[in-house]
Image (cartoon, rainbow, N blue to C red; front, side, top):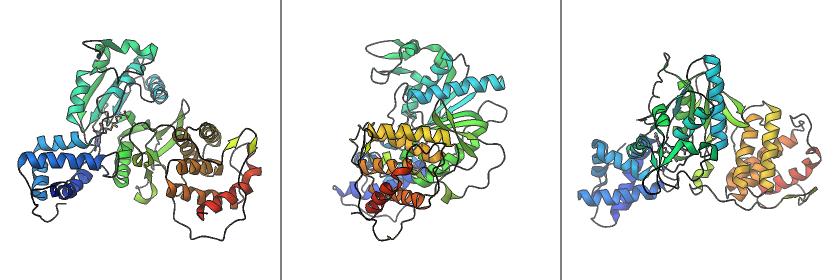
Length: 442
Ligand SMILES: C[S@@+](CC[C@H](N)C(=O)[O-])C[C@H]1O[C@@H](n2cnc3c(N)ncnc32)[C@H](O)[C@@H]1O
């Protein structure tokens, strides 16, 4: 992993050279991709400071110190980990998780076991505990993270006003005001959640159940920071840690373009979850699971609404530009479609996604359109609108791949796999012309 030693001049070169060796370490030990969410610049700043404080001018030496000294390694984690989280983040999804837990408890007669990996400062684990308590479900919740400082704050359970700014009225009793403008998690919730350090690249922790498996895993907003290869491995580890019928919930930005084998998509309260299926899945072929984290290339804070780009659907009139089809183009490879499955849920997701796009909420639209395509890969209108979203988000090459997919689907002449074709049929030729023009870049 280490590069051959190079001696640095004690100048600003420390930043450029140290970053290379520490980069390898951050990627192999934490799975983090350096091109995500400011991780590279955070690492460079850490390297500069650490090298200066130790009087080190050699990049291998600095990496060796970080690897052999637990304290320095934890400092590195704290420097590069993005621990951005808050209470009741994506409330709708957490409510779905709580109703899943209530069902599960009723079916099994046992308290469901929940693992919340990458829980940062614990806000999400406590939020889930509060919602489960509200649904009269006793659940055992374990929050884990690689970041010790974040876990320390999680155990203390004291939060500033920012973290609790979106607490729904009925959940206010989960927190009690304390010194200054802080809030503390109430004792009953603290009792139902425990915390431990865990690296997602390692073997999953065991639950207290005899089989050591989990009924629910809520792993949100961390895959987007990982390299594709590591994200694949992590999803497979999470699948193996689930009980049959157990659910995996990913964050809205953690996009799985193909289904992890052994997991089936399902809807809980209209949100996508993955259920562990019975039977041993075939061995995972790395090439079959593609995880694309496009938000990772955008700023990590919740992205503002991006104004949608033309063409737009205004009222009942479709205003598409029409031009003659272009000559055939060199076709790029693109992610294979996932499944041909639940048409009604897929079309609901698609319509909701299209309305969000028309409303200018490109991020929200992309989320729902991706879910629609995951459930039903032949929905070309979903692929088309997702491509428009990607264009609006500046993700040109992803958009182009989707335009290809749309062209293929329409050209195949297959009917849309939903009950009513929803009036899309008459748009096929218009859309075909547009996507051909877009892949030609004209
Ligand atoms: C943005 S926070 C997500 C917090 C919470 N899950 C949410 O959705 O609000 C990402 C967390 O992932 C953690 N993390 C990053 N790499 C990790 C790894 N390899 N293993 C475990 N946790 C990791 C970071 O320390 C950070 O706390």
